Amino acid sequence: MALDRDTETNSLGFAKPPGQTRVVVAMSGGVDSSVVAALLADQGYDVVGVTLQLYDHGAALARKGACCAGLDIHDARRVAEQRGFPHYVLDYENIFRDAVIEEFADSYLAGATPVPCIRCNERVKFKDLLETARDLEADCMATGHYIQRKAGAAGPELHSAADAARDQSYFLFSTTREQLDFLRFPLGHLPSKAATRALAAQYGLSVADKPDSQDICFVPDGDYAGVIEKLRPGAADPGEIVHADGRVLGHHDGVIHYTIGQRRRLGLGGLSEPLYVVRLDVDARRVVVGPRAMLATRTVPVREINWLGDAPMTSRPEWHVSVRVRSTRPPREAILRPLSDTTAEVDLLAPEEGVSPGQACVFYETGGSRVFGGGWIWRGA
Image (tube, rainbow, N blue to C red; front, side, top):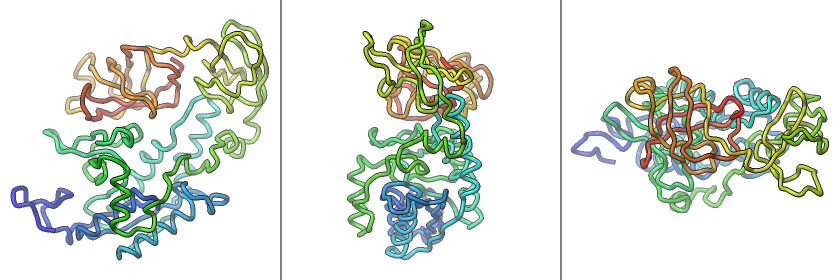
């Protein structure tokens, strides 16, 4: 691949030929990261594929679609063999358990609704794996995430993906400036997942028709509470289901079976109004329910903020931004009021329902695609 005559840089932004540019590709075994590896290898880059073994595969060995299952390691290895680049499997089980799974369990026990995929990116993939890439003398690390890295006046900027339906910026808000310097996201500009699968077919990849993963990789059947009970025996202590007005409506088999905003499977029949989980009182082992109106929140306290704006967050008393308080919801207009370098209060211009501690609040440029960072919602709003 020839260098661009104007910039004298290759497609990854380095002023040297692709063959002299080493790229470590984080390969999950899915179609996205496989296409990234095949694409870069086809362009002549010095590609090294790395797959992380993050947990004891157990029952997931025979299940497709879980990003860390044994079959996925096999699929990643097959892609590397097909395209002719080296591939390594690294045992990160202990790191993953300490940095992600343990906190997931503790957060659920505390009544929060954690997002372990964000912690995995932050503490494992973009930390330990990134350091491994540097040890391999790579110029950069590429992933199959749907997000864009763009050149800005003050350095690389993080932007949401061109395809809003596939955008993963919510899960990558904690990417630091230093990490962003080293990372590349070759799929972020693609118009759709169909375009990715078309590339997989073009390269003859065995994973071209592989289903997307749906669950958290260490919860292969979607039973979060079952995982918590295994990690924390005795966690599912029974208690009362209580209306916000104080009435005891029923009993439950453990607070860990409930999340803020939940309506189904409450086990409360014969009521005149639909009820939702509005609060989890872990200490009293109570699930508090109420009408939908009680889920509406305008003020969201946020901590552990990773700020990616050009000027310091505290350089202004307030920022007009758009925010997402759930991965499945579109950005909403808000005012961000910094309290310190890492804490802030977010005032939503229109109330949101089901804002829950443990979820992320991600900041975006109003009317644009740039990600200004984000933080963690840390107490009941």
